[in-house]
Length: 171
Image (cartoon, rainbow, N blue to C red; front, side):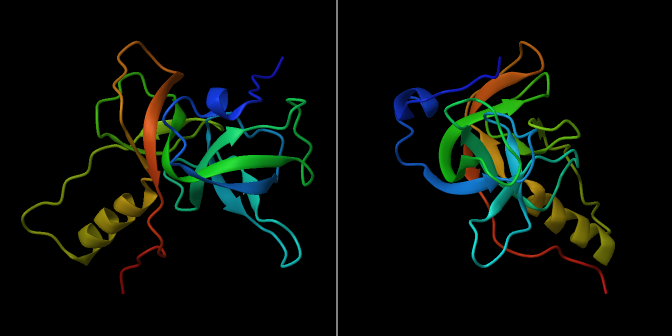
């Protein structure tokens, strides 16, 4: 049976009313509750489409699915899901340990976020290092507001803040 919530106060939890959510069409059936979604194709006469991803660190992350259809069943290209694009919400994280303020990105498992691997820029860096650092910042779609050390597949409180922009490339 699919995990489904029906009421806003259960959906987002107390204190999550400041989150900005948008209605989107589920592009596939593997979108998970509290999992990150990416922006998928859409038409000008249609709502935007949200899709799950198995690409770790996807730059297309648009937010977190915070509400599924009442039935709990997704139908591709028909079902409406609510996606948090800014503010506090629950986020499913597949990483075993999450610390306060850890940057979160999409993971290789659909419907789960992961803690972004730390990267360092050496004191002598070239343009490729700079490009990698900017893209890592862009891939982070949220930060963790709670800590978890109990293992993978946990739900954390996070703050979603999509940084608008495009992928940086070295030229």
